[in-house]
Length: 192
Image 1 (cartoon, rainbow, N blue to C red):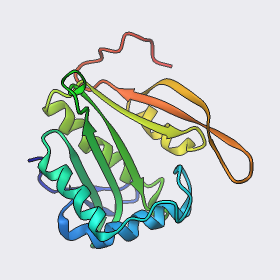
Image 2: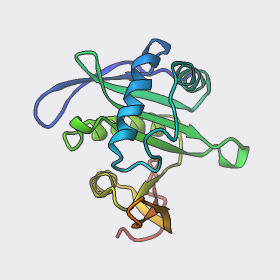
Image 3: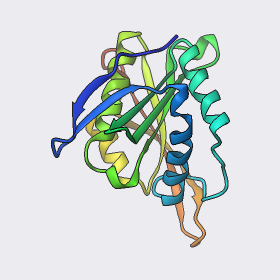
Image 4: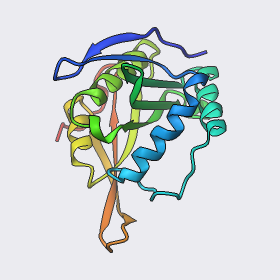
């Protein structure tokens, strides 16, 4: 079972945040949180209403992450309000279990204040403790703040899926593939 101890941290503006594992009791608020992040649209592929997060689907997601070795689901909270969520899953086959992918969601009103850094720092430390060799992600090329955060923490671009996403306006975005190698810097490519 993957459970981490709750940790307190500070955002850049000295607001105290608690980072802890997601729990089944969080499902109601997390369903509403996911809907809010999707409705905002920044950095997400889906449009409002394309995916519905139910309490049951959130409970199942949380339980899978709590019950599966080397999976992680952590939340960032301020005074009982969810401001961020990170989910990480290792590969499902023996040859892929040395690495995994994550998704990161930050409440729109809290973006750019350090919640993403706290959640990712928790993931990187947790992954390093377990010997996970590669942490990967996919991010929209239009999510410039997110890409800057990932680069700041040492993630490198591995490639792009060109014009992967088409917006209602007719404009396109690439999906940018990035990765970090927390167990030593084993990526032989020079930093960009």
